[in-house]
Image (cartoon, rainbow, N blue to C red; front, side):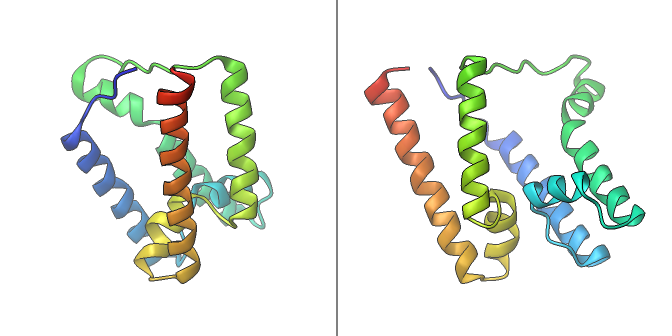
Length: 143
């Protein structure tokens, strides 16, 4: 499995995510954690709460359509894993998000920007786990 290095696309994505996080904090005083946004969308406390959460979620999933509008073609999305592996991975991430009181976007982008000690610790755990997982998958399992 080869990982393609895409510095400009990564920079652009980071700028967009950072800008969205800052604008959400400035306009609504809310932290942009994807898991919390989705959870609040499932059980909203008000109509206004549902509306901004839905707008963020639609913005997140409309990325490929924006790429198509600019380039004229849909981006190729390749998922190197079976549906069962994706489901298991999703469940593991769900457990981690629950125990970690948030996800990588909430802790890694917003929490670290606020110098939250809990978010810094959570992000270090996320990164260490990611590094170990990639090592195991690529060098032990051999995928």
